[in-house]
Image (cartoon, rainbow, N blue to C red; front, top):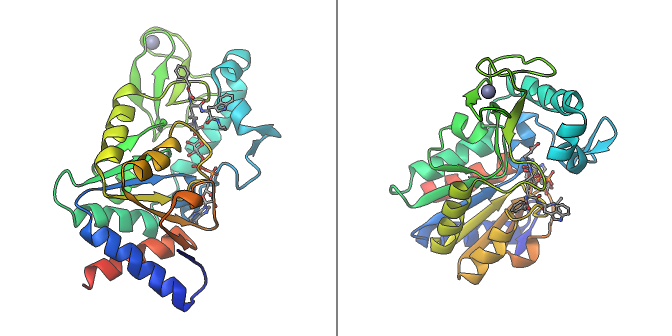
Length: 256
Ligand code: BV8
Ligand code: ZN
């Protein structure tokens, strides 16, 4: 079932989604860059997915960093600077309210985003599959620090060992953090409702969670501006800005 615009079937789709969430004992949510778009953060494929004319998939890699660390740091420093001025939007706050309305352990937020906005909005059980832009990791001694409020040089070095620092994010061709990934798989297997918000569902293994949820018998709800690779797996599709869709869904859940 899918709906966009303010049609009758859109109301029906919202009611179906609300009834799925209401009866679900455990909920897992997977978010992508789209949930932060209304906070002013560009998505990956929205802006043509380019950075200084290069595909993000070619910049966010260990090879690009080895070849030209300053170029890669320029990409990340530009995004880190952005982070200091952006705030969570109504969609983030709706997901925090949804977790708040659930018993402990009954809600897991799995995010591909590295912007930290879910935590800023108040969510607590968050699995950051692709790391966090505010943190840096030393390529020498592996020390991890949260430096989100600082402007870093184009080639920042570790104060402890002098080696070059890297952003503490997961690049393409790098494995996801084992513990976060294992917990994400467990939450996906255990949930009755899997809510997919603001992702084009083309980056793996994160996108694979959607078909896992469906195979495990969970009802899949998609919230996106438009249909995606995940749409064929969704029981319900709510199309429009997540900053409008999610608050409306949470309001419906509150009022019944
Ligand atoms: C791995 C951190 C194996 C960095 C990210 C070929 C070559 C090499 C690799 C591969 C290959 N084919 C497949 C792969 C695997 C690869 C992959 O999936 N590639 C894709 C491009 C095909 N995956 C990997 O490499 C992963 N690692 O496989 O390792 C391995 C195993 C063991 C040992 C060694 C190796 C690692 C993937 C992680 C990459 N890092 N981010 C950084 O941020 O700089 S991924 C990056 O993409 C972000 O995390 C982002 O979140 C993620 C996914 O993108 P989306 O979030 O979906 O964003 P997108 O712009 O695409 O879509 C936005 C959506 O929002 C759209 O649908 C839009 O309609 C919607 N939207 C917009 N506005 C709104 C909205 N919706 C609602 N409301 C709105 N207002
Ligand atoms: Zn170090």
